[in-house]
Image (cartoon, rainbow, N blue to C red):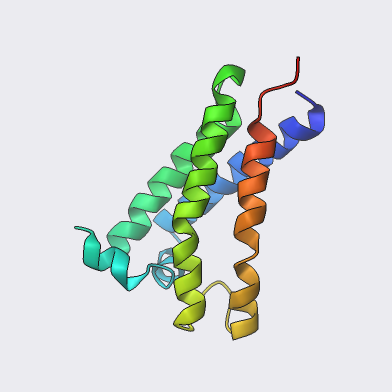
Length: 133
């Protein structure tokens, strides 16, 4: 694995761990703004429960991305890409319902945030792909 790809993998893992910890602590309120009403309606969890659960998942996923043995990294990357896809409706809901959080206090900023998700998906897949032999 190239040094650049390894650094990208560890950086993504660290970012996910930080995001997960922020879900569990200092940013819980802001993350609740991203929970779509339909998720709460279809889940046994309230908004805060969804935020806490996703925080735990992000810490676990970030740890797996950063520290998984090489042979497991492609699977971990696909799981991360699926996770980033699964949480996209939260970002979409924040934009549609004009919910302010994380400094995203205009329609333009909330709309712009939507384009980060494909970058995260590509980053996860690229940084964890199997080395060419």
